[in-house]
Length: 342
Ligand code: PMV
Image 1 (spheres, rainbow, N blue to C red):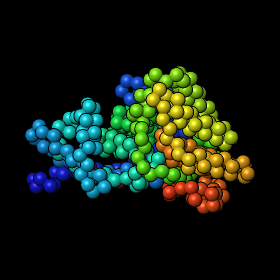
Image 2 (image 1 turned 135 degrees about the vertical axis):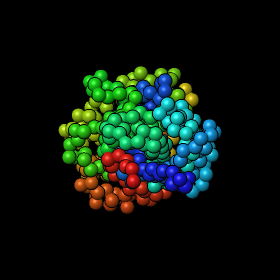
Image 3 (image 1 turned 45 degrees about the vertical axis):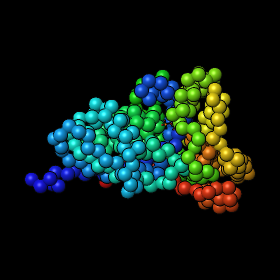
Image 4 (image 1 turned 90 degrees about the vertical axis):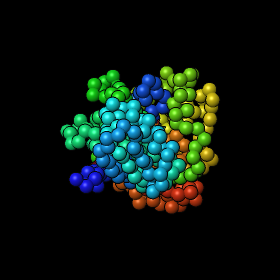
């Protein structure tokens, strides 16, 4: 047989997600100190084309290209991750692998690129290692494996909303993997996310460091309890369609996340003056129009403006008039339903 005939190809893309209730603080092997709940994005995703063919020698043969260029640093990270998972290590031993990866969104924009990247990496490796399996089982295993690469990645397999972390009153919830949230009121079925880039430089403090600062944080216990309570409340809110509660939980969560950073032992601040200006413009707009628009933040200075599709024209006017002058750019995204193989 011609060797090229034995080369197999898997293509997939899985999205990023934005947490409404934040995961901040972890223990053990990427296990969360509290439950978190996210909106899955649609336009912000990582695409991977993976080629692989069987090899007989025992040496690692793995290449990782990001946007056309070989990326050794990220390759090392992916190899370390994949070799540590029983599900993937045999596949890596027995195959020569080339990954071509790209993102649909620019760097350092407040879109969690590691969530999209590790969701997609876990999905393609699992597909190659396991072949076709039951879809629900596949998603749960992929979510579990993606979590070990980047915690928040585990939520990218389901949409429009996913929950990760054990909640006492929800027996199917788990710290190991995310689950889909199925009971969604029509008010929240078609949410939009305008991502306002106020700063496009990489942040000074990584999320890994941020998570670790929760270890000796004076407010940790209260924060974890608060986040779990917010997850429970948000499940009800999503079910019954209450915008007011959606807004107050989402905004309080965003500010709590940053409050944790600002009050940790090695305190730091990721918000910039532009962040506050955008937040104030959103709050002012909501006050004057009564429309259900709110903000959230990731671990960075950029602002996600969330609103239902039904008011997109009004929000467009806000973005054009008041937000654009404060922004380097605005990325328009919306709720998505998870990833796909192509
Ligand atoms: O998944 P990590 O380790 O990059 O941490 C993500 C933490 C936040 O994005 C700030 C919150 C979250 O729940 O996504």
